[in-house]
Image (cartoon, rainbow, N blue to C red):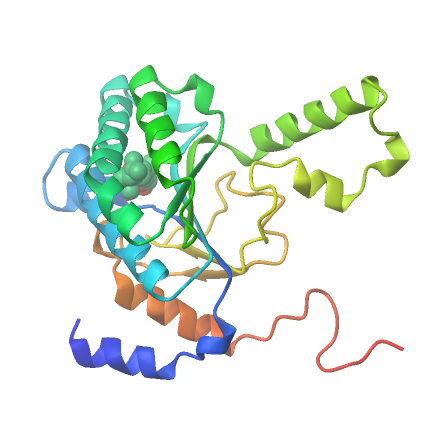
Length: 253
Ligand code: FPP
């Protein structure tokens, strides 16, 4: 992809209307490797380079939140060897990238049932969260052992507990409270969801938060996905009209 295309996309973007929150399902690592006759682990490793480039460009564009789906609650069904590769890559990514993440002001915010991850992953995450806690740039949510349904279960349990203890009444349960009890508490819902690799599924990702998110997909496999594709998604996103169930240009009376 030439620098000309990149520049043209950068020139097309309306800097005042960038999404505050982008979510990405990093799909296609396995297919990328298989197409090359390589073990799946090579695809995951190549996917790490894509993640690095996308985190960089999101920081440069001053996007506030980026949520990436790195390991789902369903991914435990994969062979233990592949699960181990993914956990090792996570530890490697955090170790290798932590200095750049700090230099560029990225704040790491892992989401999911983190206590069920292998201890080496938990320790690396905790260290990275502590080192990046005071950063004020991009908030990078890495979804790990994450499932949208499990997140909803955790939210229901936490609200039920508060009702049981008498801290809140049932009448106080509303959309705002529900949102504040999800892993993404305090963050705006994603404006844009990107899914590479051709599949058109939500795959148990951010089920509550994606209610009015714009969906953008491409056949490009995640290990081939780079900033130019993200910029294409942004240009397309800015052409859309978001009505959130309302009507175009109609003032409520
Ligand atoms: C889905 O592709 C991808 C994953 C389950 C893992 C995503 C992981 C990375 C991008 C690696 C680096 C990042 C961290 C932080 C661990 P798939 O394997 O299901 O692809 P397929 O559908 O082609 O088989």
